[in-house]
Each structure stands twice: as C-alpha cells, then as structure tokens.
Image (tube, rainbow, N blue to C red):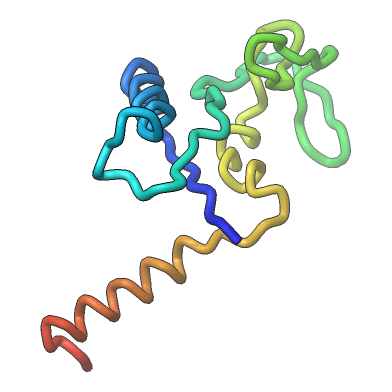
Length: 124
C-alpha cells in the first residue's frame, strides 16, 4: 500500500516547479525525498466560482440558469454562461478528490504529535 498526498500550492509557478523537481528526483537524486516518490498527477484547482444572478430552483437549492460544460484545459464542469464552477465545488475540492476514500491526515497528525510529546516528556 502507498500514500498519495494532496497538496494545494496557491502560486502556480511554485507548484509546477515543485512538481517538476519531484518528478526529476529519481534521476537526479534529491536526498530530501524518500525513494519511490513519484509525481502522478497535477490538477488545477479553481479559486473563483459562479456568481451569476440568473438562478433557478433545482432540487431544493438555487443553481445558475443555463447549461454546464466541461472545460477542456482543466476538466472542470462550469456554468456555460460565466465559465466558472459552482461554489460548492470549490468548497469541497479536496473531499471531491478523495472520491469516497478516508482522509488519513487527522489520524497521522495526532499519532505524530503524541509521539513527539512523549519524546519531550509531555505525556499527560
């Protein structure tokens, strides 16, 4: 079993540079990265959402009027009039990518913090 890390980096240039550096680590030996580290994908994360005033009630909530289309460059589904995704897509971005998997991060953080506290003698 392996672990995949989802990391959001707000600066696109920094994110792309890091992805490149990690992808080259296997051939150029970057000691900070563990052996077997592989960049498997890079996805663009939307930061602006649809604020169209023309809305209609669908399934009990307000939704923009008009069709949705998939943007070829990023693969996002967006409102065809403004070409932006709905706010809930942005708010739930990471959960949507987990696709039903459990986010292991809270448990990992808790476990490591307990270990570090024990090493410092802060056990309560």
